[in-house]
Image 1: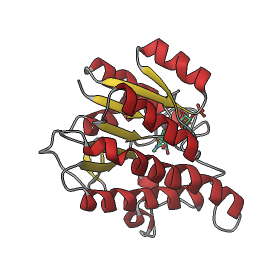
Image 2: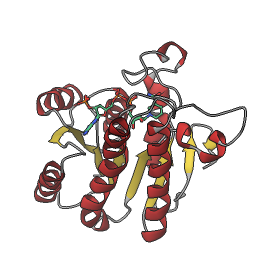
Image 3: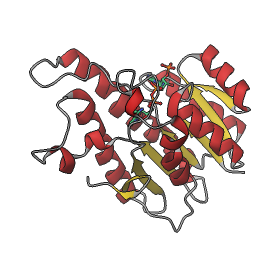
Image 4: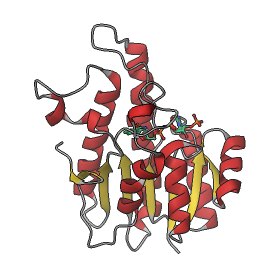
Length: 230
Ligand code: NAP
């Protein structure tokens, strides 16, 4: 059975991806920083609850040890946990917010990926899905008429995209891709939820890229319709 781990899966896109991948027959570790909410979500869906705060090295190490002891390897890692931060334009942004957003969205994802690398290497067909955003696209933001006036969050997703490219090159046997769910109505988007699509739709690209075979693409950035410019 395919062993899959999804970070930040208590709610929103991570939880929906967990639900769908369980339906597809994966054995899913539903990872959550809050153990009680993680246990509840895992019980609701029939997943394995796993405590994992992506900003806490000890928590990551303990999660790796548990997966190693229970199943011995990891086939699919979905780096989904993320925060938006204050979403302020450059002139108002603070370094405190920048630190917090980068700590979760970039350092956290990188630390989780590095820690689980030995278990992914033991898989016959390792797959990594980094849940990014078109908000992090340098190409879209550099157009005069498009883009978002924010600092921390776009910077974090641009860096996550670079993590994707570097890992895809370093581990050619793996499938490592960045995906953007598009504007999705979750707790993440309280102000814009009305304009966003439902979580079932947003999770589609995460679920599809989590099920790639070893002949699938790697080092790509995609949404539901195909490639997104870096
Ligand atoms: P959400 O509903 O706010 O869920 C975020 C999840 O991340 C929660 O489970 C949260 O856990 C978890 N999380 C936050 N910090 C964490 C940490 N330090 N360790 C472990 N888990 C942590 O947001 P969402 O909309 O589902 O977003 C999921 C991903 O999609 C994010 O990476 C986001 O950037 C990306 N994305 C979202 C949209 C959108 O429109 N919604 C668009 C593009 C990309 P708690 O429950 O404990 O807070």
